[in-house]
Length: 445
Image 1 (tube, one colour):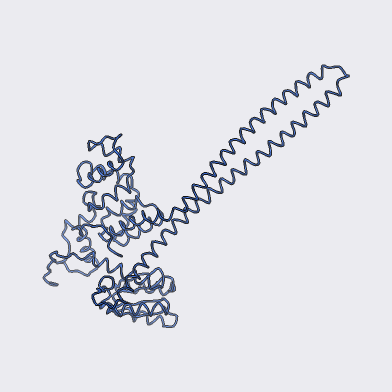
Image 2 (cartoon, one colour):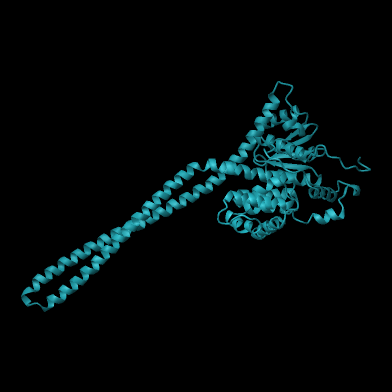
């Protein structure tokens, strides 16, 4: 991925110790390269808020703590007026307290730890940076971002590249959500207006029904009174009274029918309002899915465009190291895919002075040749949509036994492969510390 338009701190000594300990555990480093006891003890400690890079504090405070919480906490350690200070002043002061790391920074740390204790326990199960990043991606998919963001930023296994990835995801999410939600927001506003209109109509109908009920009760009382009076009349007026009672009863029946009609209309209006509410909720869920897909497609399209510009440029001043330098003298085994995409991927790798071996996963090539092609490979790549489960599981087992890095691709397209290579190249350049003095080893130099 591209480096974002913000600056992050260089890799800390804790992360360097983590990497050294992992290499020692995997048997790829000697005792002379192992971290000290103090560094190993520090690996189990989560990072504190004040130890993080100052450019991360703004996103952490703004994402993980609400303005209401900050308005109660920040004035305790500053001279801000809790009632008159603006939200921006409260936010800026909270960021300054986090950078200073004094009593205010400790209070912010405590508030975040107490609020997101569940997410911290969940992330404690992650034992390496890839597991931490996988938990972040899962939280990003589910929309539960604030707890996962705080747990990731302070996790003991989090590297600078993982923090940079999480920061970039959060930064882009603020742009994509606002642009993609406009049409749905307009429809939601229309639905809310219609809902208000329906509720007003229901209220009017209920008022009318209540009025009709009172009229019916009055008519019933009047009918009872007239019936009692009729009993006291002479026998000559019995026929007239019976006719009047019949008329009143018919009027009462007509009013009951109107009452039932308005009741049915009110129930139908309530059902329509509930259906519109369910539709709005389904649209929100669909919008979240489309946001995730758009973000993935944008990353692949951007990586493919950069690669095409480098490979198709006639100007010798173009530097191919920007996105393809990692392929130089690297041997790649590509399993699965489609013939057309595989040919284009092979040309890209060979144009960057790399070597690639393509195996179709057992369609025409025998699966037995797959194990013979893996020794000596620097990494193995396979698209999850163009490879059977049997070949994929066998490939993972062979790579784990041979300590060979393997990477799954979202699709068999050229864009997915180019995006992976660009991301690996960016991670490799980020982990390099220019100008720093290298550590000297008696055996390795």
